[in-house]
Length: 272
Image (cartoon, rainbow, N blue to C red; front, top):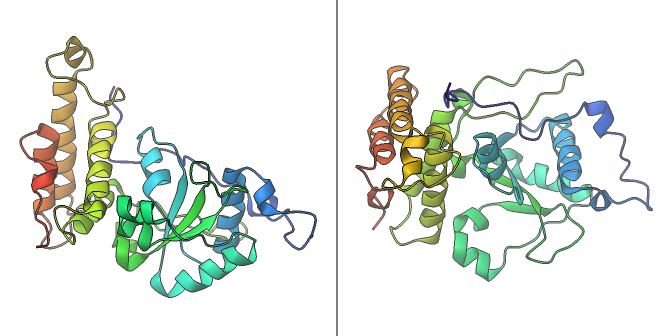
C-alpha cells in the first residue's frame, strides 16, 4: 500500500520533554552549548524558544525530511511571527549561538533564502563545509498562516506548545507563492524550483528511488504510472477540501500538470 502524502509522518526530530532539555545550564562557564551534537543544540534551543512563548513552524530541510525527501539537514529552519523575530534571535544569541552572516557565494546561490533568514550557529566549527545553523525566517516571507497548519499546537502537561507543522498543500502553496515573486532567472526562484521538484518526486509520487527514466525497466517495477495518478488525485482532493487560498485554486492544476509531466516548473509566471 502506498504512503499517503495527505498527512505528514511523525516528527523527523522529535523533541524530548522540556524538563530534560532544560538540564543544560548555559551559565556554567566551563560548558558550551556548542560542545553538544547539532541536533541536541537545536532541541534545547527550540525548547527555550517555545518556553518563551515563541510560536515556531517547521520549514525547509527538517520539513522536507519529514516529507520523505532524503535531504541532509544542514540548516534547521523555522518560521516565526515577524514581531517575534528579533526577540527569538536574541534568545538564541543569549544561549551562545551567534548569528553568522551568509557568504557572498551562498547569497549568489540561494538569494533571499539566505538573505531573509537569521542563521544561528549550532556547531563549534564555522568552516563552510561543516557549519550548521538554526535558521529563523519571518512569517511574512514564507507566507504560511495558522489556518494552514495540520492542527493547532496543543500545550503538553507542562503548558509548553510544540513546533507546528504545515499541512502538505500549504507547503507546496508557499513555495509556488514565493516563486511568483522573483524573476525567472533568479537564484531564489531556482532553489525553490529544485525544492518543489524533489517534493513532487519523493513526497507526492512516493518514488523513493528519486529520478526514474521512463524508458527504463525500473519505471514499471516502481509502478510510476500508478503513483503519478494517485498523486494527481491527492492534489485534486486538496482542491475539493478547499485547502487552496481564494484566488490560488490554479495551484492545484499547476501541481497536477507538474506531476504528470505535462507542465514545466520553469514556466510558472515570474516577475519581469
